[in-house]
Image 1 (cartoon, rainbow, N blue to C red):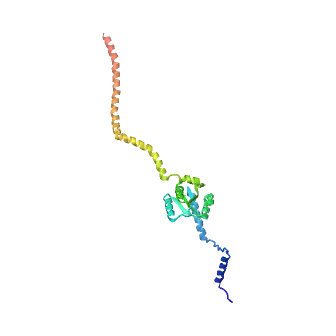
Image 2 (image 1 turned 90 degrees about the vertical axis):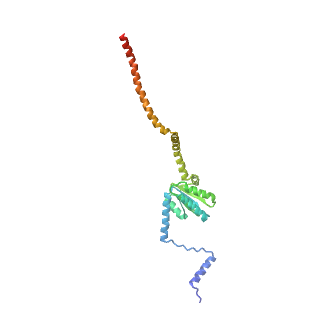
Image 3 (image 1 turned 90 degrees about the horizontal axis):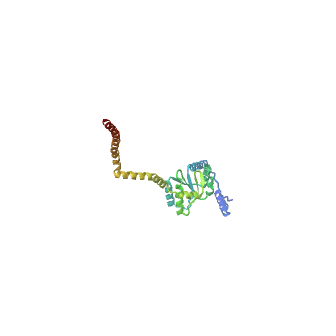
Length: 235
């Protein structure tokens, strides 16, 4: 009597299952270390969401290595954190951060860009990239702990960069100062500043002299009637 080895029996079984198109999935429970690692990722991500003033969720499907490298470089130069994330992990982080309204768009490939200070940088860079790449799509976003719509993100994307804004503000402050500086420079060029102080010192004695002459003239005016009276008495 011929008895097949266990390996042959299992091989025959799987071949039969494949022939019958039976889906044979072996589910392996995650280990404790794997669960702890995922929990740490969710905790870090949730803290990042809560500490960010602005965040944008995108679908990056189809991006090549070259474009991805350029995009990450531009975001990094503008202090924007950009990471690819699993939808399940982001959903858990959203729940902790109070941003569960974004869960509905978390399908397919997902990456998130966040900024701790700049409200417009992430939206501007990602929106400009999406214009030139049809496969790249902005799915959702949040601002100051509240989920915002795509119109808000597009509006933020149209704002100028921080450097441009600072330059405009600085220019507004410098305008009156520059005008004042031009006036002062014109006076200096004409020698007015150097000539003003001596002129004031020279005019002061003249005014004092006039003030001294005034009592003398009054005294003469008072002496005239006295002399006339003396002449009349002498007669």
